[in-house]
Each structure stands twice: as structure tokens, then as C-alpha cells.
Amino acid sequence: MKWTQVPDYEAMSRMAAQRLFDVISGKLAKRQQVRVGLATGNTMIRVYGMLAGLLNKAGHELSDLSTYNLDEYVDGQGGNVAPSHPLSYRKYMTEYFYDLVDTRLGFKQANMFFPDAGNPAAYDTQIAEAGGLDFQLLGIGFNGHIAFNEPQPESEITAEAFAALPSRVISLASQTVLANACLTAAGDLSAVPRQAVTMGMRQILAARDILLMACFTEQTAPLRLLKAGRVSTETPASFLLNHPSVEVIYTTDTITV
Image 1: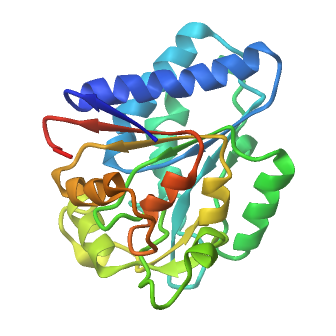
Image 2 (image 1 turned 180 degrees about the horizontal axis):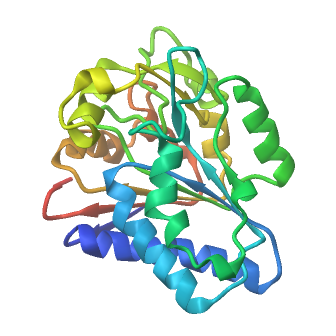
């Protein structure tokens, strides 16, 4: 695992955007399909704006680019929240990335994928049949989760079983609901759905390269647990320690590890 310190959010965003751009442009230059896993949240906003700028400047034809988002909220009827929902991740991606990409580059809306609460297993099959993810962008939850794979006590699940968790609908931990309310819903707990559909650990860990970003003070604790080097179901991000190609970028103005 490679650890990279950067001075601030802007520098972190610039580095992450360049990494994503290099993966995408490198594959497209060889006329190959490219599949990238994408995360949402405040951490990623500048990344996607910068990435769109890089893609627009390069002018690559993007019909061979496919994106696979980590998760989406689930509504009260058990389906994905509508794109019009204020916290919808599809809405987030459209606003902060897809609408910023020049339409003349040919990115296909049909190549923008999200897990489906009605059939989560189909997402794993779809990714596997496409050839897996070339690159996965991750944030880290204040409780150490990646995507919405929440911590579980070691007494309840083995490390092997946790690493093999598939895409599924899960109930969000109270800490996650509180953090997301503060970060995305002006502190309104009632605005945050209590369930989400998430990409599983299995598909995340199968990605060829992984980049994890952190810029909030509250992420210091899980990063320290990650740096300690012990894999635990109580810190889901620690499973990245077993992956052959992971980089962690964190901002030194807010985090000390």
C-alpha cells in the first residue's frame, strides 16, 4: 500500500483526477474498453470537475468508457431512490461529472451504471462479465467503511466471509446516517434514507488498481487503524491491505497519521 501526503484538498483532487485521466486515456489510446468504479460524496466533487476538464481538453472519444458507481440510496418501497431525490447519487454524478463532459466526446448515458436494489446480484454479474474494473476510486467513511460496506463485529463474521460479501441492500450504521446528514443534508437526519444498495467487498477488491482519498479530520482514526496494518471486519477499509495495488492520498492540513 502506497501512502501519499498532499498539502490540501485542491492538491488531492488534482492528483486523483490525473490518475483517473491517465487510466482512461491510456486504455482509450489503445482502443480498449475502460471500466472505472466511482465514488460520491464531498471528497470527490473537485475530482470530477477536474477530470471532466482533462477529458474535454484531450478530446478522446468516450464511447468505450463505462462507469460503475459504488452505491445508491434505497427508498421506502425497496427500490433505488429516484434521480430527482435531493441525495440521489445518480443526480450527484450527473451534476458534478456527466453534465460537465463535452457531449461531442460521445460518452453514452447507457454506460453509466449503478447497483439496483431490486437485483443487487446482477451488478456483480455485469461487472464480472465486462471483465472487472480497471480502476476503483474510494473514499473512507468516518467508521472505516468503503462504499456502504459497514463494519461488522469480528465475532459475527470471518475475514474471509467479509471479503467475499456481494453487492446487496444494507441498513446504514447510525454514524453513517449522522455523518451524511451533516455533510449533505444540512444536519437533517430525516432527509437521509436508512438503507442503501452497495457494491460488495468482493467486486471492490477485484479491481486492478484502487485509489482511496481522505480529507476530513474525522477520517484520521480509520486511517490510523489502516496504517496499523491489521485486517479487521470492524474496519472494512483495512481489507485493502491485502490488495496488490492500492494508493492512499490524504491531506496533511486536516489529517495526521
